[in-house]
Image: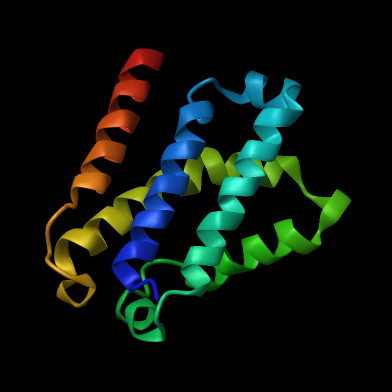
Length: 137
């Protein structure tokens, strides 16, 4: 069974996947259905991982809007053709970077998820994101 640390790292991995295409900007998102599907898919992974975190971890971190993260997953999965792409983009552009910072902080500070250190996997994602962001600017 996967523990909270592994699920938090799953969230970071999905965020990294989102960031890989988000740096291309809104025009690329608007014109490419595959990029839209990519974003939706990885947002659902984030919500699924968040839903499977222990209630204790979620309770210790009320600064993260867990019900909203999980609720978005439910809307994306069950909304079918009613998905609001504007809301998807706002989430990708504004909320996902904040979530990334919050999850990284939990992994560094929360001893109940294991050692309060950045794992090798997490460091690889951070490096990849930082490289992509620098390359885009």
